[in-house]
Image (cartoon, rainbow, N blue to C red; front, top):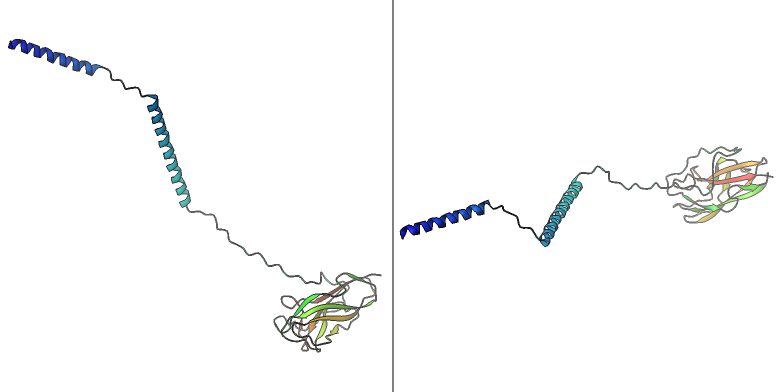
Length: 228
């Protein structure tokens, strides 16, 4: 009885070992994933790759922005202030000029004596005048200073042709600060045809002259074309 039990146990052991050997020798096969599982794996892979690309792009942009730049920062350059031109055209050298400029000093720094040119009342630049004709040239000005001009002030020829004058003209009435006045000089056109110029400024009793413009250095001008 005991002998049969031992044999029976031995047979069971042999069968169990054989089964284990067969299981160990059986080739293992991976289970085939379904289409849904494959799609999920592909989507996960693409998402991971997109995330990696985004991170790499962000790192590159941060690196670029943090790098020092050598591009100069533009500065605003103020536009140049245009130079004011004289209302009466005085261009080039006078033609057939006979008068010479006075040596009296110009009053360029005082606010006491200042003049503002308002325009040519008559005989604007390049007006045609017949030879030998007498005419009255008039400029309109304003006393832009802080002091009055008395009748002791004169108009003085500082350059160009005298045009029949004695190089002086009178201030016939007191001109107070802010007053507007017409300054007139009797002239005579030269006998020879051509272009003639005259330059006039106001002179005070002490001989200091002044005109208009930024530094009181612009003169009252006349330009005529003498033609028959």
